[in-house]
Length: 112
Image (cartoon, rainbow, N blue to C red):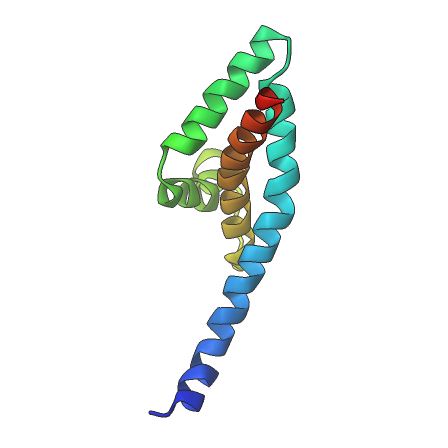
């Protein structure tokens, strides 16, 4: 099999991977900033809740979060799952990486 043939076969996967990467960054960077502001809030209740949420998101495997986002709505509320799997993947990746970006932002803010 030639390299051109292999690249033609891999092209759809590369396009989906790049789309997931782009949309994950697009949503996780601002969401991480929101998480940071809530986590560093002077309100101890909000700060404590965000500390717990960020710890859970950073402490659970991404595969578990993908399963929860994909199948959770159906099992909990009876909502039909989306046939296009790109949307739940982007949601799970964005929330997961927002927790990591939140810690990066928090470290930067606290160092100033």
